Amino acid sequence: MLVALLVLGGCGNSTKTTDPVVPDNPFDLAKVGTDSTFEVMTWNLEQFAKNEAVTTDWVIQAVQGLDVDIIAMQEIYSGFRFQAVVDGLEGWSGFKANSASYDVDLAFLYRTDGPLQMESIQELMTDLWKPFPRSPLLFQGTFDGKPIAVINNHLKCCGDGTIDEADDRDEETRRRNACILLEEYVLGNLSNHRVYLVGDFNDELTDDLDQNVFANFLGDPNQWLVCDLEIAQGSASGWSFPGWPSHLDHIIINQPLFEAAGGSDTEVMVVPLQSFMPNGWTQYDHDISDHLPLVLKLKL
Image (cartoon, rainbow, N blue to C red):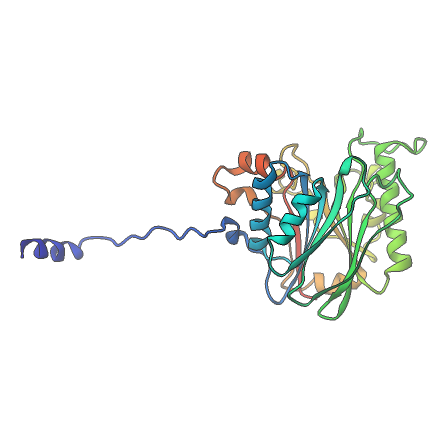
């Protein structure tokens, strides 16, 4: 009886507490996708899989948690590990190119259980090594019946920040020429598609226009929208390559997407996946990548 009185007597003076619910997949808390929007993501996975099976498992969980529709990936070294990711994802398929020097290949993951339909995946401009050391990878299909095209890129790295017109091996010149060729390809072949140019472009959007490799896109706002420009102009804490820090991963869209991009559902974001891992950036960088994913979400 005394025990019962003690318990009852304490109820009115105590505060009930419960432990926070920790999901089995920590990246569930980073969810981006919705049933009513189309999400395109670009993600450099730095020498995938840099920590073998550990990396593979983290990537599967990230894809499941983010819940986007299509992912353009760069630096996919291991075809075996890439296939393990595809096999670990219900309702997804994938394609990995295998033409890049040193196996620094491009790839796509894409949903197969919704309104996204893949029609073809192919490499472009395979004979143009100087502007494209990794040939662009084109995904063509439809989303909810609307024609879409996503061109995955990983442009030449490095350089001194200056475009040297006299040197066709100059890194900035090669990236500038790649951007011009991409524009020409889209205008000549995909004018009726909603086009996304995505990837690791290995250059910053904020250079002065006369030394900016993206000048053809930035200087023609009637044809192109650089979706992540505000991110590039903002705080370094929001950039896609924190270790430098710099913002090298971009999403550029063409005019047929402008109306959708202006909708209330539209978001463009670098997803801080390291924030959902127990040991933060140190663990993310060791187990997954030195780049963070960039996502554009909109309602087509």
